[in-house]
Amino acid sequence: MEEELALINQLATRLPATQLILDANGGWTREEALRFCERLALKQIDYLEEPCAAFADSIAVAEATGIAIALDETLSRGEAWHYHPQLKALVIKPTLIGSLSACEALVKRARADNLRVVISSSFESDLGLGQLARLASEWASNEPPGLDTGHWLTERVSNAAGEVMTENMHCLFKMENSA
Image (cartoon, rainbow, N blue to C red; front, side, top):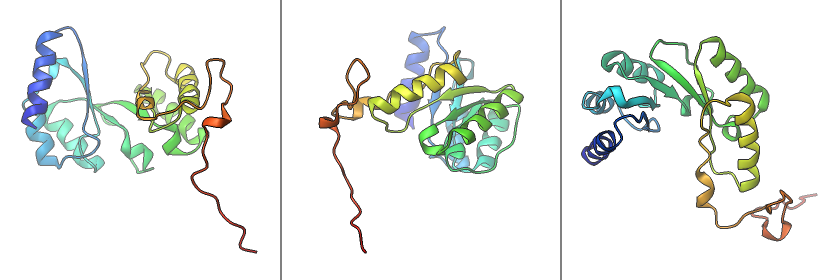
């Protein structure tokens, strides 16, 4: 936590006009999140994604510290949530949510509650990232999408023209017919 706070403070000092987005991936207890947020320069924090695994804990942290929050893992897990004044954005990962209709419902709900929408990736190929970029341009054209996971993959599956390069695709699992 000390190293993260030092890095955030360094960025805030060097880039005073920049709003930072932080992401805890639901990894803190309520107490840890409170300790962390109490030491932040909140004026430079745009929002903190999912500080705690439980929605109620994230809301409690937001209320106690004044930090704006965003939901991410809560949406991907399909857990219940409700509007709160400290809730600023929904980070939607279509691949993890599983259906376009469920994603569209989240986008509509966000718009109804005046929340920002960010389209984000999990670990898609370049082909999947291209589709997510198209969804982001339709659903959240004013927000930079979170599509930076492609660098973890070693090969592309499509060329510059968007054609699928089947030679770069490898079957990882094949079910045998048991009949």
